[in-house]
Length: 195
Image (cartoon, one colour):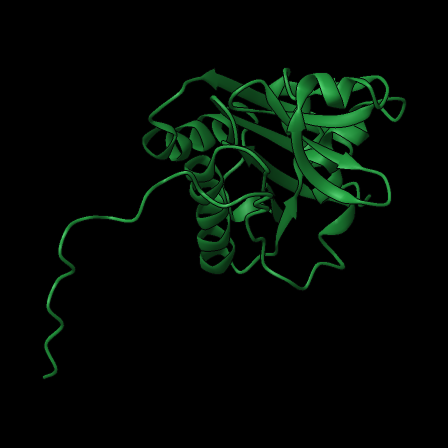
């Protein structure tokens, strides 16, 4: 890792808004706000606070790291769109990091598992890929590391982005393991006018 790199990482894929700043190979500032709603309104002020705490500005950033899921659909879209917009506006790369990658960075001895509704988890099953299954079924596969520590997870996102930013060429995209629960809108679509 270059010693002069500065990576701003953030994640809103679960019931939190989390951010960390990596300078060189050290996390120099981080914040986590637990929340089930309001990540869209809280994310940018939180990022400003983390930058200020580290004595940095937007122009100091080398790259953006962002958690791409799986997890909360709206939360993932908030982070990914913010990361892509910041990267475009600042002229720096944005690196998508899955929750599975971040959890594997935290513990290589356990299977990464991300909590989902109805006592289920998303699991990166070896040689099969990400799947949604009952937590009890996942536990039968061996020890699990769960996404219960957003601070550790956003630190891992920053460290992974610090390694991958120089070779990343694809903008971050949400990692969805299953389709959204939302039903299609029953509202009549707006009339489009050709002009």
